[in-house]
Structure formats: C-alpha cells, structure tokens
Length: 328
Image (cartoon, rainbow, N blue to C red):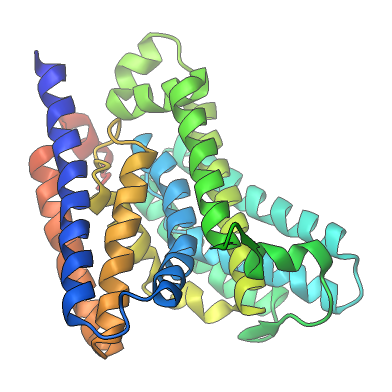
C-alpha cells in the first residue's frame, strides 16, 4: 500500500511538470513574438540537449543516493585537453581516447573517495571540481577558449548534422537517454543502483557490492560528461573552460530535481529527466526572448531550484541514514 502511494506521488510530479510545460508552451506561443517558429523550436531543443545529456549522467548518481558536482569541470577539461592535443598534431582518435580516459579516471577517483574513503558525495565532488578546474587550467588547457578548426569529418556531424531535420545534438540526447533508461530498468546493475539509493544498509545485507557500484555510478556520470562536452564542442566549434566556474551545475541539478528524481535516492527515472529538460528549456528560451538579463535569469532559476528542493524534501523526505551521512 505504501509503495503504491509513493509511485502515485512520483508520477503525479512528472505529470505536473509536463502540464506546466504545456501551459508555458501555449502561453509563449500566444504572447511572445518569434517563439512559435520552427527555427526557434529547433534551436530551443538543440540548446537544451547538452543540459539534458548532463542531467542523464547526474540522474544515475542521484538515483543511487549521490551527487556529482564535477560534471561541468570534467566536461570542459576532458574535451578541452583532447582538442589541445589535436592542435599539437596528435591524431583526433587518439586525442579523444585520452580525453575520455581522463574523464573516466576522474569519475573513478570520485567513486573511490565516496565509496572507500567514505567522504560525503557533496564534499568529495565539490573539492574535486575545484581541483580539476585549477589543475586543468594550469597543466592541461592553456587558454580560456579552445577554438576547433579544420575538417574533422564525421565528428563535425555530431554537432552540426541533422537526422530527419532534427538537430544531431537532440538525437544524441535521446539516444543517451534511451541507453540510460535500458541500463537502469533492464539490467541488474541498474537494479543495484535503485536498491542502493533506496536503502544502502539493506542492500549491503543482501549482498549487493555497494562500493564497486558507487564507483561505477561516478564513472558513468564522468563518461556522460565527456560525451556532452564533445557534442557541445562540435556544435559551437570551441571549448570554453570558463564554464567550469559557471552556474551550469545548478542547472543540471535543477533539471533532475524539478523533473521528479528525489535527492534522497532510489526514485525517479530517465523520463523525469526528459520532462525536466523540456520545462527548463522552455523557461530559458522564453526568458531570452523576453530579453530578461542573465543575472535576473539566474535569480529566477535559483528560486525555482530552491522551491523544487523544498517540494522534493516534502515528497521524498530524507531518512535518518541520509542525514547521518551528510548527504543533501
């Protein structure tokens, strides 16, 4: 009875997000010039697809009762380093492989700090994000902007190509979301992540390898961050390392939480990420058309994030174990 009630609440939140998105879409279409145009709608989807890809990686960690604040830093410095190597004459395939290995290495270190050293997720990844930003700027990427020129062949299609008139970044977001959905719902590793997020102690007592699974979670989020960075680099033909110090990580958390994935872990799915991505994409596009300043947009997003966390704490209250671990 209790489980049934919890499922009903989660679905209601997802449906509410989709309903709000529908209302905003109709309102913006009626009252904002240039909103209801195919070019603007495709641009909306393309712009929000990177955020959606990052939110998929964050969702995997949050469902397992964690959080990864290094995703933006991993995204810009792993891809930025790869294209620095390309500019120095390294073959593109080898440079991307090294960039991916760097991202995976950071993810594994995050997982070890959380699972084996037992540092709370928020503190471990916050410290690691600072280390990555500092060390990456000092030793890996020599400038704030890495411009990507020349013919990169099939790689360029990841950012500028289309499939049935749909921008390729949107297609890749849907592909990554589908892969994550299958991994979480149809594999035993996905079941382990849900079990760990729902009740770590019970999971340990039942024989689930909690620590390796947590390392796996952070490895997945780092790999997804590298993929997002690659798509972004191919879309705008550059890598901006200043993003590591931006508020983008809060946008990712906003998408995850507002979509209906509980920060207490064990609840939600990739469908919630898609719902949250649509809502945030509509909000950002609408505020941009209304010429609302960047600072004001950040204030509005911050207030929405605060409201979403308050609602989440009511719908998915923290248990005693979560509080003792210092998790948010």
